[in-house]
Every structure is written in C-alpha cells, then in structure tokens.
Length: 294
Image (cartoon, rainbow, N blue to C red):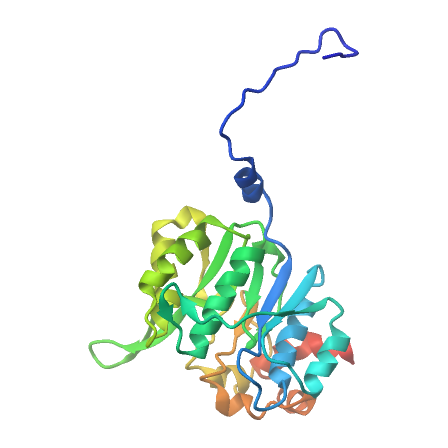
C-alpha cells in the first residue's frame, strides 16, 4: 500500500465475527417519524375532531419530525380528515393488512389487532407510536437517543380499608418510542405469543413489557406515568372539565383514554368547544394548535 508519509503505519484488520450491522443499529438514534393507526374497522362516522387534534398536535410539537404516518386498512373520510391532509405537509398514508393471528392464536378483538399492528410497525420501522386519543404538548426529540422508551400507567384499586388507591398498572402502550429491531422489542415479540390471551387484553400488551423491563432494564427506559398518562383513565373530569391554567411541566403528551372518556369526548366536535373550555387541561394543550392555525 502506498503512502505519502514513510512514517505512516498501517494495521491490517483481522477478519472477525464482529456484527457491524448490530453495531451501527445500536449507534443510530430512533428515527424521527411518528406513527398512528386508524381504520382497522370500517368507519361508522366521520374522522373526529379529537383524532384531528391528535395528529395536528404531534406535528406542531415535533417540527423536526421527518414524517407522520397514518397506517390504515379501511378508507378514512370526513371534514376533519380532509383538513388534516392540507395542514400537515409531512403526512403519509400507508395501507396495512389487519392482523389475524399472533402465532397460532387467533385475534378476536379489534384492540388486540391494533396492539399487534403497532408492534409490527415499530419493529420494522422504529420511531414514535401514538394512539389516536393522545394530544402532544412537547417535542419527543429528547427520547430519540434511547434504544426503547416506554411509560408506566396508574390503575385504580382499593386498600384493606376499602379506600381508593392508585398503583402502577403496567406499561401503557398508547405511546412507545423505539429503534427498529431493538433488543427489547425482540424480547417482547418473542414472548408475546406465549403471554397473549385472546379473551383478555392486558397480559401481553401491559404486564409482559413491565416484567421484561424490570429484568432487562439496561435495554429500555421506563418513564413515570406523569410524562404521558396523568391524569389517569378514571380522571376524565380533570382532563375536560376542571379548571387548569398551566399544563404540568412534566407532561410531554397525554393519553386521553377515549374508551373511558366517551361522555366528554363525544361533545368535542370543533373549535367551539375550545373557545368554551380553553381553561381545562385539554383546552390548554390545544392552545398551540389554535395559535398555529389562527
């Protein structure tokens, strides 16, 4: 080998079994892309204002995100859907097949199909997954340097005195952040079929990742519930009705728990609700969307 400097030394690297692909995967950041899933069932009503705000707020809170994907099966329609496509220039549609099985076990419930779909998407593409009943407040960029980031959630129970208490109720899979093909997601997927119970919901999606995170804590960052999941699913009034003048500092995004908040969410149909309720937590978190558009 020629060189311009006679003092230069060259060391020939031996052929080793070092896994360079794995090395570079570990060094890369999480891709700055955001994923939503919608339309695994045929729509019975138009795309809602709350879903519109979920995607719009993610776009506004994450201006450096390269793409926002809506993964869908059935065609999406509605006034707010049409507006969203005009107002979010980095929005991309990606049609997917509906998962039917987890291993040899048949999937019977739509919630389980959505759980499997989000796992498959994050395994292949990496990035940030968010449910359609979330609202973003701050950038997700600080989490992109970790291999995988998940967040705990509170559940409500009672103590020996029959008094209500809250406790850690597993991992909430409404918001997840990971590199593609991360070690932790590989472990989770490998154990998913064994843990999956077709007639239940929580085991494979909620409790399994919490157990794995405790055992393999060096592969995953687990955030406290206050980052994404407080107020909890039983505290809808604190989200949509109680007075709020400042968004808590630790809150980056909020899972609205749509299935538990239906009585409030059904009345949120447009910006009129915002004008009448802007001093609620949800209203305050909508402020950046309103300012951006108006």
